[in-house]
Amino acid sequence: NEELWVQSVLEMPKRRDILAIVLIVLPWTLLITVWHQSTIAPLLAVHKDDGGDSQRDLAAGLDSKEYCLSERDIVEVVRTEYVYTRPPPWSDTLPTIHVITPTYSRPVQKAELTRLANTLLHVPNLHWILVEDSQRRTPLITRLLRDTGLNYTHLNVETPRNYKLRGDMRDPRIPRGTMQRNLALRWLRETFSKNSSQPGIVYFADDDNTYSLELFEEMRSTRKVSVWPVAFVGGLRYESPRVNAAGKVYGWKTVFDPHRPFAIDMAGFAVNLRLILHRPQAYFKLRGVKGGYQESSLLRELVTLNDLEPKAANCTKILVWHTRTEKPVLVNEGKKGFTDPNVEI
Amino acid sequence: PQRRPEAALPTIYAITPTYSRPVQKAELTRLANTFRQVARLHWILVEDAAARSELVTRFVAGAGLPCTHLHVPTPRRYKRPGLPRATEQRNAGLAWLRQRHQHLPTPQPGVLFFADDDNTYSLELFQEMRTTRKVSVWPVGLVGGRRYERPVVENGKVVGWYTGWRADRPFAIDMAGFAVSLQVILSHPKAVFKRRGSQPGMQESDFLKQITTVEELEPKANNCTKVLVWHTRTEKVNLANEPKYHLDTVTIEV
Image (cartoon, rainbow over all chains, first blue to last red; front, top):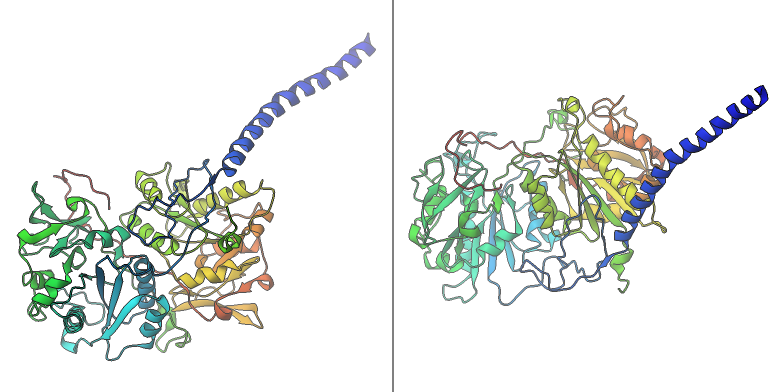
């Protein structure tokens, strides 16, 4: 009996072990099989570009298949027709967008212009007018513009000491970039004749803002002056024109001085080139401009409130953000500079 | 489908941790505008969140490039200043890549790098990193209290670090200064960013220690003399005029 008992004691753990193994291993086997199946199957799905999918008005050849992939839906994309032409081929039917960007030398300058160029390179029929606040056109900007492949014009004019900001003081009474923008306006008037049939749109794009590609397509249909909301200005999430049911601008949704003639940021409007050429006296006012009135100083020479064309779904979408870049901490450079000044940043 | 030259290009995987704050959509927008210029780039966007946000979900749907949208929340105890950030999110990106590729029959060439959503990337950088065999390195602008930091290169090999902060680290390099081949990530399945025992500023070093040696590093950007990526940071937005009460009648996403 003892032997039998010993035998059965030896056998019972074995049976229990087997049972335990089955109960533990089986669910895991099932789980792994199912998980394995679900990750492999989608991997075998191949999507081809069907060509007619373009949502944006971009040149042919651009693969714009858009994907939203969740953790489990992993779809392999086989790109057969992606053509990376930078910038897109010039079109005979699109008005040219003249983007006027004042810029000045500081450590983040090259970075800012690089990422701005990466955006502009998507936009067809874009002409970048880069105006340096400098005595001469600098090699850094010359090289950068050439290397982007963009259609560009490189200008420069130095802001006289009286108007230049001292150090990092952000005094809104002194309008930064004004002389540079005015120089670009003058260049346009000297380059294009009043009777020129070349349609164009003029837009002032500061080098630290953020622009969506949709914005450029919205402004392309500007007849006189078009307007839209701008994020992160006036101490708000966004400022915006007020648009009535008839689609007309009748006021400004701002906290800071909403009674300005045009309570709008530089990034919030575009002007038809024809208007610029037909009003050759219209410039940004240089002297005696109150903070926030710079834009008004130009716009009141060009247009009335009634003529404004609201874009971005009647001014309900944000397509441009007034981002600002932090001044980088360069404390380890010391007084004389530590890093090799020949290495360009 | 015909095999085009692009099909032979190794895929570049950009792992971007992101978190909700006013400038988030702006940052992602301009980053997408850069990434969309790059052939065969797959964006892995990882939210620091318990659930996918509507903003990022909508953004990804219209982003215009292959994009994987993940999320993992940072445990509250790790959300203190001075502690490393985005650890869980980068690890989630690595986990996804491993899960996706581990079971494929043929190895797929690929390179991954960690792309924070406020840095600035030149298009040339991607050309440089695409030829990564194991781990490649290059200079980073505006970091370490200097105009740039860079690996010091002699005879095509990294021999030291030109950095403003703790040059004694085994890999004195910023997150934006290196890329790793997919093969290396797959063959080191346990290599992750660590929290335990990791001092602040040692994240990159502790990670690279697990997968490579200084001798193996491949210097890019003309033997590490050109700055092709900048550690830019965006100012916090001034929302002083936002009303506490009498909110707007419409909800507009910024």
